[in-house]
Image (tube, rainbow over all chains, first blue to last red; front, side, top):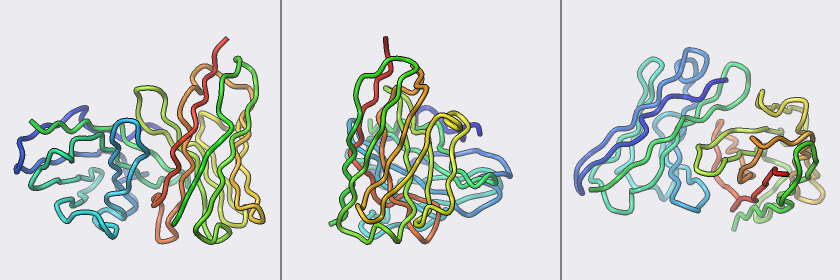
Length: 110
Length: 119
């Protein structure tokens, strides 16, 4: 199972919006609405930010939103803040009943 | 409060074995599927294995199939990963993660335990 494809880095100024893409295949992202997104700060465990494509867990800011079109899912962070600087990973359920993560995206707040 | 605490990591020689443990507390462990996820130094996340609440369903990533064995003891609220025939590329921080029953995502993670495979 190959990792889902994410851009290596995305940057934006405070207050701006950025979007991170996550591209897979019809056997994972395109075939199921089980795409999730995780935020990871250096030296810390990942934190769930979005699940089932577009749902936010309790306590996660509404500045984070998710969507999907075909084999590509997206995470949008609006009103970018310094604390959003972190690595972000997408994940999807697959047709093999396994899970696959994306390659990861480093978000930099300029 | 949900807590997941991994242990058992360390330095092991190529070809060696290691058993990781994850102690769970703050929730009904026997009701949740559990997973292992790893992260090599400076690299991304890699899903390793999952086990259903009653151990009926077990899955592995191709990279560890035949070498790693996931198991659980619901009476002890514990998750395990037996790792055999270890390779340098297995060097990583290993996280245990709770799977949300609503879908295939992880709502709680441990702090991780480092496994280093080196001669």
